[in-house]
Image 1 (cartoon, rainbow, N blue to C red):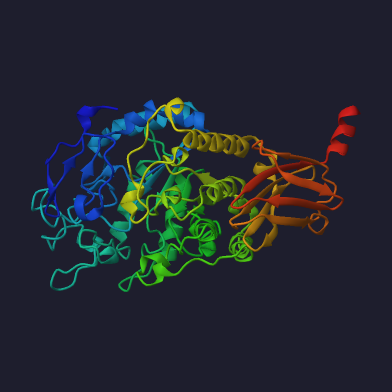
Image 2: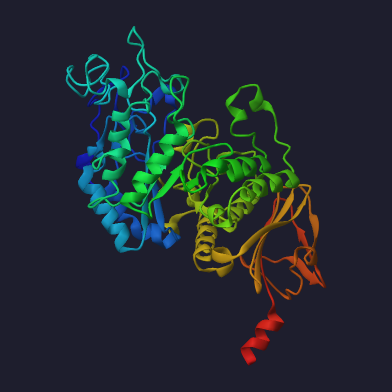
Length: 507
């Protein structure tokens, strides 16, 4: 990284608050009421290049970066100008260097962008004239070419995303805006797909509400146009959307390629671990409601979502446990650390792309009661100097990442949840010759699971191994698999048809 790029303390004021340069990397991220998302710790895209050896050693094959475009806040979801990577991150040159370094290693890059709204100080809007001269932008100039990029009334009031004063909503009823965002040859979303940047995927922030409001609802039309325009530039580009609810209807090939799988994975899995639903906990009253999700309910949530789409599409869903919008599970004292290991295993073994939120592999510190508590600076302690529980966590992630990339069962295999009782779930990935079975319990006592394999067409597997080297009370008894799962325990069982494999080897 390059310290000369860092934000300087008090360099500018935004929303009445000065930016702060945090000089001690280990300082915990302050809550919004104190920091206002204006605390900067340093670090840049060159630092990511310096860390690629570490990421590859973990088994990472692609990076997903939260917004990097020029913006006033630390979260950067309030862009000032989509044509420039933030200079404090190294600017456009640093992004070109990063994608080149990634592609040389066979790795890929997905950038996060919010084209639903911009900053109220953006070049197109420029309400307070902090970064651009008064003659620039739509707020103070009714005749500005960007005026119809936004929703203004006769009194110059404007529509804001989620009511946030500093985030004016973009108006996709405007043909000029559509051309600027995705339609023109030099449009925002096309520019970064082309050399020298050549990113591989877009993650669209708040995609579920973009281009639809009480003022204009052109949602389906706009997403189909975005798909068509961007695939014409790079047919392999992945368009991934943020969506917290059922989005199968947008995964039919003409709009999104994938979604952040809150609905079919993160939300129900976190409930199964004992947390309240991620939507409900935003309400103070509902936040007090304890989760009572059973394995049968978890099975239904996962299977019903996957059943709405072809298997190949389910294989593209982004499965994650933690994100920048959710407190980290391992920092919640009410969540069993052992039970969390089962959730991590499920994340890697279900159909889809497992996503490691930075630092989860090291049990990164944080607070469980606000999203800023999930955004602490990365722990760069050498692995050998970590505590035993953190080293064990890294071993678990590495082993699962290796399996995800090399196991034919996880790459090409079928999927079925074969057992759900009480708070114990067993999920199978399988081919005709082998199976990986994730058995996971959030119960407080031993649980004897008796799985009728023949009922699922899996009879005949006669070789059984636990892939983390754990001792198990598991056995194959004819057409049944019997396994005792300890409290909050989990196993990853590998089954194969040993007799047939041995016969084939002797031919």
